[in-house]
Length: 171
Image 1 (cartoon, helix red, strand yellow):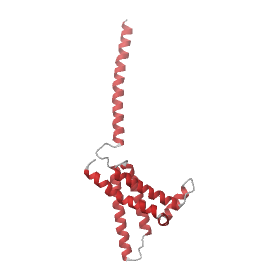
Image 2: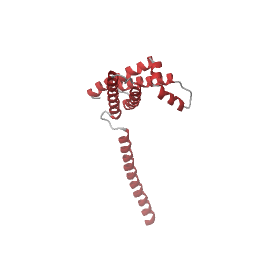
Image 3: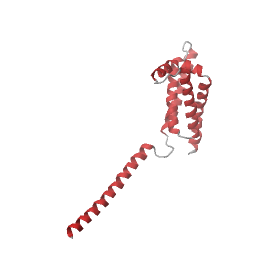
């Protein structure tokens, strides 16, 4: 891992870890703020779930994925999860921001820019392969290698069968 990745991942993850802890500590406030979205989510689930539980799940997901990203473990998956939660958070904060005053509008814009920046950073981290090939590249090359090996084996088998046939006809 490069020095840049070693430093950048925990720096990016720290904001998500703190936000996840805050959501867990203040699950009631989080549920209230996320109420319109969580209500719809709880209605579409096949089991009974209340908004406070979903707020805790969201906070736990943010905390866990932030910790995994910071440690460099399954960082692409963790960053993808963080990008999704960050986009959701951006939408919710944008909708629930106080815009009755000039300061409120300015704070709303500032918060939106911060959230969009965090989402962008998480998206970049979600496609970062750390210099190693991604799964799609590996799968494509494994398939190509298998085709080559199968082709070579087919040619060898074809030669062997032709020899046997030639020997049988010639005998």
